[in-house]
Amino acid sequence: MKAFFLCCFCLISTQLFAQVADTSALYKAIKTGDSLIFDIGFNTCNLAPYNDIVADDFRFFHDKGGITSGKAAFIESMQTGICKQEYKMERLLIPGSLQVFPLEKNGVLYGAIENGDHAFYMTEKGKERHQAGVARFTIVWLLVDGKWKASEALSYDHRAK
Image (cartoon, rainbow, N blue to C red):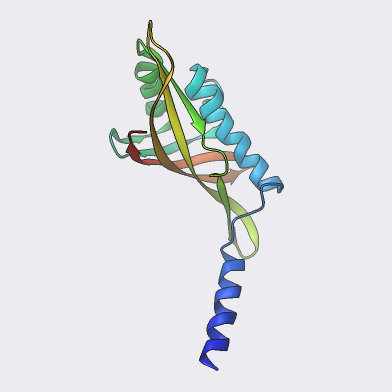
């Protein structure tokens, strides 16, 4: 009898905490946000989308660079950091690693958690583009007035390729 209840609990809990399908509207919305942060912002240093998709009280936790608090500080750190380097850094989402988990209260969607792995590539003057490392990331997204806003982000487990 205990085994039956344990099996039922496991089945129910996996449904309650399951990530959404990569074909769902939520997954696509979060993947679009990820693309604006990384493919547009990080990779090209076009930081304009950050004004719309990063929350004013955004917090960024980096296992090598510390904590950045606030949207303005985050944008400034990008402008004076990665966007001012003599080399070009590029972030690519590792295929198949993106997971999206809905956040609900009383059955109403209010946010999502995005998890994944990403690889970083470096192009230095006079050298071939090469993979500099990999890391994991988590972003908490909140639905604010019908728009998705990155509220908190963690970039961790940075390691060489």
